[in-house]
Amino acid sequence: MPLNGHVTLEIAVETLDDAMAAIRGGADRLELGSALELGGLTPGFGILSSIQAETTLPIMAMVRPRPGGCHYSDRDFAVMLKDRDFLIHNGARGLVFGFLDRDGHIQISQLETFLKGIPDGIQTVFHRAFDFVENPFEALQILVDHRVSRILTSGLKPAITDGFETIRQLIDFAQGRIEILGGGGIRLENVREVVELTGLSQIHASCRATAQDRSPRLRPEIRFGLPEMPPETLHRRTDASLVACMRAALI
Image (cartoon, rainbow, N blue to C red; front, side, top):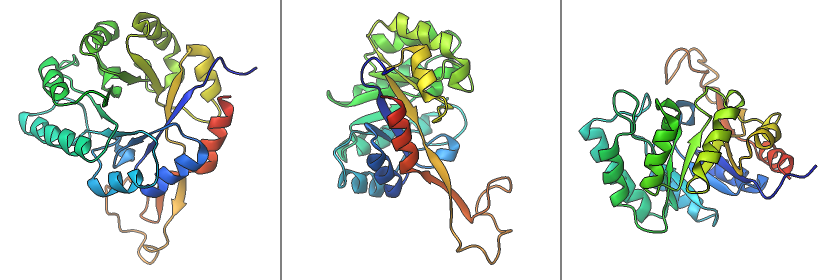
């Protein structure tokens, strides 16, 4: 049976090729970040401007200065404020961020300072930092009170398929005051179940596949990153056919 209404499909991308694949596959919205294998970090000007030149789809730009948690020093936060202004000035339609204190509560002072510099019309997205909070309903109310546009969540679980009940409760608690974007472990084989069992009207996925780069083949033992990372002959990229199949699964 068809789903009840259009489900917004947001695709995480990190390159222009990724963005074009997502667009060809039927994405409704893009989330742009670098280093997606680390959960996404702040992108640069070149990629943002290049994607903008190719599409009118809204681009949500990640503001995250480093991997590993969401509790930021004053210096990290100062950088994030500069990134906020830079991304807005260069055409991002939304910003993706998350601020927590050492104990996993929303860092309200940083949240308020960050939001003050965002003009009307720019969407604000609290990312999966939300999945670390102690009390999700208290956290959700804080974000509602601060007029954040949406949250990205897996229902406080490593994968969204284990967080269905919490997501249903969050949607019910939100009562339309803030958007709930489901993400975390969404794949082609489970996306329809995710929507049917949660009532989500928008989902976030990567739809990435492994691609090859033969240029390092003469010395495959060399790694630019950590030893446990995949070899330099392999990388991940958005697959247009996976996006298209996911789009079709949501009809």
